[in-house]
Image: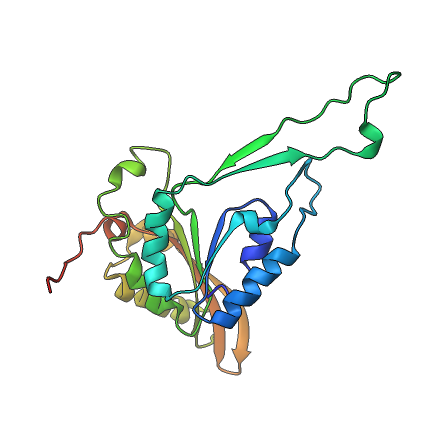
Length: 228
């Protein structure tokens, strides 16, 4: 779903840790190539890093398995990045100048939990939601109320019909999410779910993006195992 990096690269350039996956080998190849082209941090931050790829973990596998394997791998990740401060040529000290106050080196550690999942293939993204069932079974202690870490937000793109107020479409999308997760959203959960009208794609077809927090009942659910 990551494609050539329209979501991954801008995030990584802002020092966001990104795990990006696309099943298409050519898309994966282009993602890696584009990340390598974005070699330097172009923002106005006082820190500099040589490659955007430092913040991107690119994969080429089935999306269903990626959701589960990436969460497990991240729990055991110890990746760190050291960012060195920018030093302008005019800031170099001389015998007649006061020492230039240089920002300290910044050390960043990759978080153990994903904060966001972006499923941006609208034709099929909803069908990947079952992979979140039981994603963090046995890891209750890593999340609120035991820690300050919240379960991840999921942003899933999809297609639906068109209407003047989108009310029918929003109800349909919410119903499909509930069906895929085998979980009924109710009360404040429905109120907290945001469904964005992205754009029209045909006279009677519209793209939407639904954003919601992964419910604890879904994330920690014990799934059945099949013995071979």
